[in-house]
Image 1 (tube, rainbow, N blue to C red):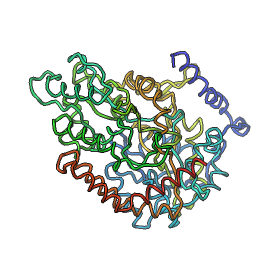
Image 2: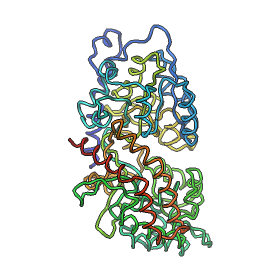
Image 3: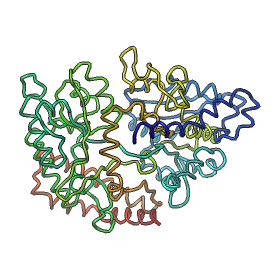
Image 4: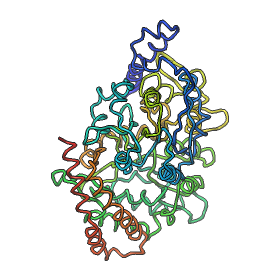
Length: 530
């Protein structure tokens, strides 16, 4: 999209916001407003305290210190008492909370696999009536984009969670390369596995960081899944997926023959030192540390958390540093699949309301505000005059965000006032990403992601909901299967288990009942399509 079209799109998207701001100068104006944010026009007579559980990302300040929530508390007279452990410890804290029975009022980022279990137990409540009565903004989105309602509604017609979604759905987690290394070695952006092999081998052997040491790590990432993700080039995903060449039938990737072919290639890269020897134990901190040491040549990562963050901070310490994107890898069968898509809503369970909540309607209104135009503007852009200004009807970040005087990245500054880079009940506005995306990210989205979405939709499953009996079968099977598969795939990649044992591995997975789980997914996908 050219600059004029982008400007017009943003202008239209926020025209109503400007009208809303212009009309909020008096109580009479507020009463006469027919905006979708009208549900927030009043405050509780007494201050309400809501307890919420949510993980805190490394780049975020404590949630009770965020400007967005401070401002919103003044507006609503609702105080949020946050239980916000570090993201890496969130599951541990979450499991302790659920086991204790002393539940908070709201849980953000409940594991998707737990939703039906706790709904059946009555630990979380259905939201249909609350959304109908007290969530006009979410209702408006569901009317404009029916797939949102389809995603969050179970087969029994009940809704148990609030979603997180993008104004314009795209995806994330693209492949990235050191552009400066490519230029230094006179290499082109790779597309096929053979081309990738050539580039990674050159990164290892030709000293692109110029320190005279053989210390380069051609491909790294924040965990073994980043290596496993490369299987998509063979037209197979590292999970359940639909096979377009097989009439859209559901398959489980880690037992497919094409997965084995991909795994052989990945294991070869690892054996030859082209994949980080510590990738199986890398966490986010370790991975980012290696990027900062000027030794990593390629990775798969998030647009904001990796591409933009690296390009905005690392050139200060590594002269010439620059990350560029690549198209999805094109494998031997002609497939180019970008597997990480936001088809309508994010796959995360953004928020649930628990049975302990005594203020369910007020909580619903609190959440719904951030789906509306005023709330979305607050969540995405922060405080007007401090974090952004309105210019020609558009919110524009200030230099505090984009050119921080203290040397903070845009990611860090935004993490000081909002949660839009982690899980939450909000809509991520395109106008935000248009301003914070660096040129590499913009290129990925326009050249390497958007053109491949139609093909990717043929493979990637929608955000389906299972009925009670089917979910019990699926959970029971996958509890053992997932553990065993993760263990064996890691061993195959690291070379501690020979691929000659692949057939034995597949037979064991089948013996664990994987066909039952596939049948559950097939039935549920068929029902979703109907």
